[in-house]
Length: 253
Image 1 (cartoon, rainbow, N blue to C red):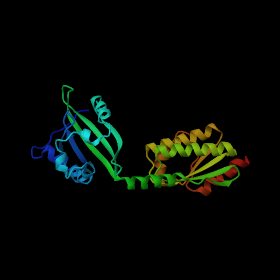
Image 2 (image 1 turned 90 degrees about the vertical axis):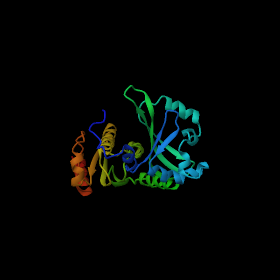
Image 3 (image 1 turned 90 degrees about the horizontal axis):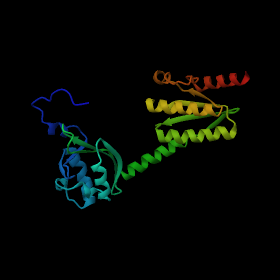
Image 4 (image 1 turned 120 degrees about the vertical axis):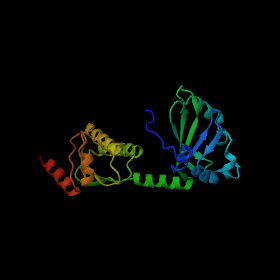
């Protein structure tokens, strides 16, 4: 979709880019860096010494090849770029960042240059600490709380990588030990958006395939607004006690 509306004549486009608050650079079709905003200059003042550059001003006019271990590979990727490109990169083993490269396409479909953005820049140490935290959260205890029943408290972020690992572990445990019910406690989940809802749906469906029923507990009023969109008809309760009472009653039937 094309941009809409008009920009007031009192506002400079370059000034607007400078006030976005993100690291933004512009390169020409030869991949030479021609402009950067003040946020990019602030960040690159820290990064430039890693490349033997005294200050960010020296980067203007330099080629993007400088920042790549294999420039030929990068140029091949750029030559085929027709849309936004995103990737996670490591800067001299000191920083980790998400790079977003967007071709500036003219009305005749010709590429006039590129916008480069560095997002979520962290030090290598900070990235390792974050990864360690996620791995720690991944080690979720599966508690045997009742006959053929385990409790699974979910804590923290619940992204795709973490949920896939968790589902594989739970399926193995249930298959090996003939588990009939998994009590999933959601009270520790920090967010419950579309991706999380999809992963919970996948867990309940996967457990169902091996004959194990999933019971969701710890449903707050906020979570309830999202959880109703699950398609499996999974039993849900506000407390673990109510969920366990439900399981005990089902086992007596």
